[in-house]
Length: 106
Image (cartoon, rainbow, N blue to C red; front, side, top):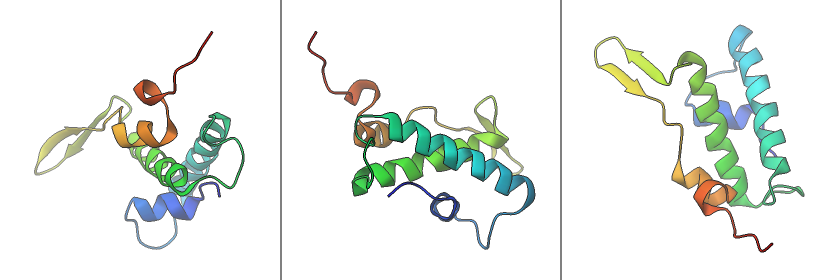
């Protein structure tokens, strides 16, 4: 299984269906996540394992959220500012990237 718009939209907790600019951005995000994960050793052959699909959905949600925070900062009117994480150990662990990538013997 690869990631769908509906899976990412649901992870974001948004009701209904995305429309307008949200739908356009979600389409781009979903395509980017599927291409990225599909090119990784853990995602090369669909159907992806459940943990890979879950991590891909989380990655998609994080990338979609960054739309409103190009510098990694989200402003909340009453609460101030917060950073959107650039790194998530759960995603890295399940996609076997970053420090969780398997060793390579040359």
